Image 1: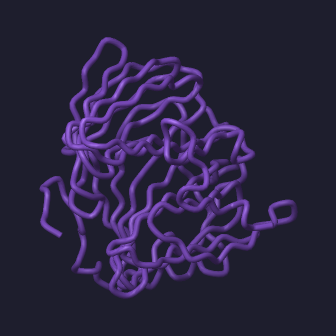
Image 2: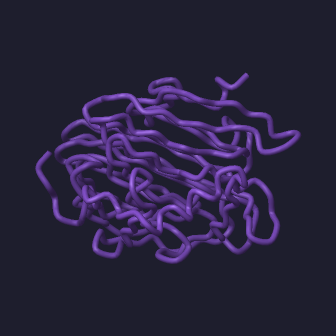
Length: 290
């Protein structure tokens, strides 16, 4: 039953994309993710349709043509070398992308109603947050959250977790629309440095929300979270972990509100006496050598 929540690399390709997760394929209403891989000199064209999207370079740079604009993205060598720039793509838009040197590009998306302008998101404008402490330390690149970038429904962030640390912890959920919590469908897309393993946990948060995932994940794998407590995301010793979070839901407020699992919420109180992992931040806007 729980295999339906895990999409392995290569299982959902659909031209021109190497990964396609839509509300229809996921069995929900709003969140989507596509992955585009281009060779040197490669190009692709697609329509955004009902989804607003962000084009986020995971490796390589790209030129984006849409709405009469040309948006040049510098990109990065990998998700472990730099905080990247990105492009916002509105609904009902035809898009062409061209990559001189090739690369891999994520397209987190959300079913939306407002058509906002296409625009460039500079790397220098991405709010980098260090969250947690000790072995729960991680880095969050808030490139498209409600506080840093305007969108209609889409919430998307990157999380980098040093090897042997846990992130998305304490376990939390966002599957109800109520005070202090927003209903959000979520996609986790993973990359692991040096092609190592990592692990993701998702479990039941109440009747009708039965789920029990404790899975090894590797680069290119995706976990779907329609409901339930999720966390930790576990980076194994020696292997830094990256994941892209894509969220959207029915709330008109575009709010990222979560509720901790009461059994583990006390862990937050232990961070007051611990330092943030000195390996963080793993990336900045300056490209680094791996």
